[in-house]
Length: 471
Image (cartoon, rainbow, N blue to C red; front, side):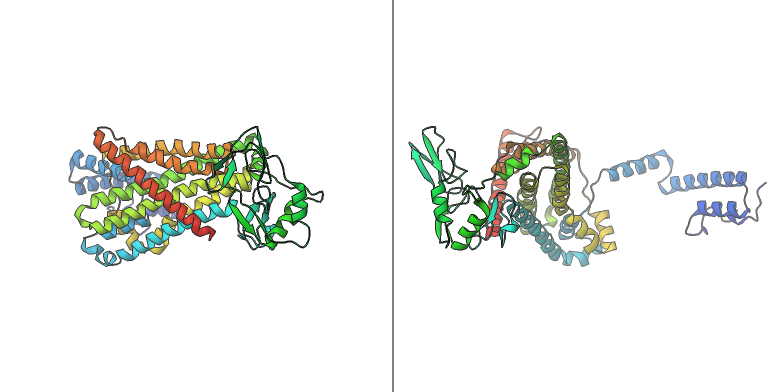
């Protein structure tokens, strides 16, 4: 028999249950001896029946209401997480009375989103440029095979390519333009050149000229940058080159940093690189998912968003996809080539660069209040239809494969310019997304053209930031 005076049985429907819940009541009663184990089992069963009856009543009764609730839960699980950019889109398009206060502040949220993406892009480009052309005050700040061009660019230059010496030729040589606007000779067995290791026909350095240039007092000299562009080196840069790059016997210390780092990689270093490439790909695909979801939220907003705000948000998302993310991925092979290809360096550098992707989530958690976040999570989430879900699935699969191949190909090629493979991967991914099942040829061509145009604008934006970082 159950003891009716037992407090654990009072108000069995839980109206007076403490904040810790009915289960905590039973546990406490068991501890103080006012409830036996058998009594606890009976009481728990009774309360479970009561909870089931109440749930059915609240859902409208019957299995139909319960099934609808289950479907709602499943639908909620397929929705996407929210972040600061999604909050911006939501409040720009909000027209509900409870969103009125934040809707007035929506332009400020957009300004924050734009500043965030601008800083992400500038930082990614700055790290990229600073890795292979770091700024410096002395050569001690530069790595092996490099020196500080003091008074010239105040950046680290390569001993074998950025030299205060003219290019000397011998034999039947023809010239080809380089990417930077200089001229190197075309590969030809009948041609030999001296004084720049980057030239296809390089055969060493004119040691007599090296001795002349490096004899004190140092003087201003006209030489070449690594891409064969003519440059005037002040006496401070000449002195820095001579002291750092010229050995005691007069030979030039022209070490190929990239080749040396790649040659030092062992089997497990390559495994770590492949693992890091997948981590980078998954992280970037997560960012692409956010971008696609924001695009879908804009489309779902309909007339609640003006054309001006649509263009502004399109520009924001374009910067994220076509400037920030390609620059971020391009950093990975550059860091391996210049900062070392050992497993520890690969892992640490990968983690260090990927933190840039977390800023929108951190800002959402810290910059917005609890109630605002709850409102965005409740009303600002994006519900996907079948076509949109399929599009996201294709985006993930295509970009993971392309980004992994781009990172590994850029590193293993040994070419400094191979970091541009990351931009090519995003271009191919954008083109692949344009092929939607059931779309007409005209629609597909239009989507391909839009992807090409957006990619081109993004690449121009990257070059603009790169030039600014070198200023």
